[in-house]
Image (cartoon, rainbow, N blue to C red; front, side, top):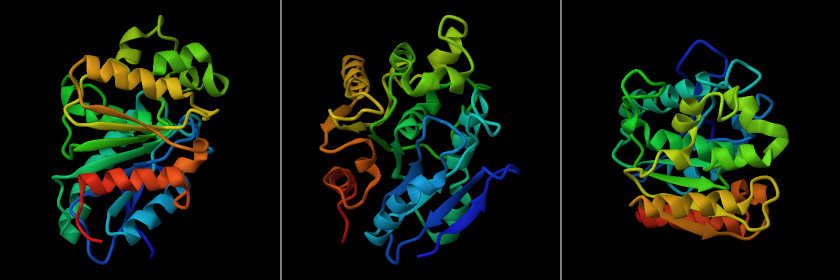
Length: 256
C-alpha cells in the first residue's frame, strides 16, 4: 500500500504519511520514530510498523518532525510533534476515521515524544504543544527514553539529551521539567512500556523507573518486558513486536 503524504508546515520535515487499511478499526495509531532525536534518523524507521499495522486494520499516521541537526531540538521538535498530531484531524475527517481512540506508538526517542504528547492537556497555555486538538487515548512506548534526567546522567548516545534540549538540567530546570515524561505524571491515559532487559541503546531501567513513578503518582502504567534487542521492537517479524500488536488488540479488539 502507498501512503498519502500530508504536510503540516513549510519545513521538509513537517509531514506525516497516512496508511489506510481497507476496513479501518476504531483506533488510529500515531507512529513517532526514534533515533535519539538526531536528524539522520527519519520517518523511514516507522514505515515497516505502519505497513504491518495497516494490513491488520489500523490506520497509521507515520509522523516526521524536525530533529536536532535540521532545525529541531528545544522547542521546535515539541512544537512539530504537537502540530503533527493535531494535523491528523483534517485527514481523519476526509477519510472517515474517528479520533476518539488515537494511540501514540513511539520507539526510543519517539517513546519520549509520545508520552510527552499524551500529557499536552496539562501544559500551561502558551507552552510549546499546549491545547491539543487531537488528544491521545493511550501510549505504547517501545524502549522509550522515558526518564530524561536519568538518560542525561548516563550520557546515553554521546550525550543525546543535552544535544536535544540544548542544556543541562541545572541550567534549564523548567525545560527539563516540561520535556521529561517522568516529570509529567500522572497522565490521564494508560502507558504501556515495552522494553528488553538486553537493550543496549536505551537501558531497561528507564522504562522501569517511569512505570514505578507513574503508578506511585496514581497513573495507569504497565511494564511489558520483551525479548530481543532495541530494534526488535520495530521489526514486525519479531516476538517483541508481536507483543505490541497484542496490546493494540486489547485496546481495539475489532476484526481481524
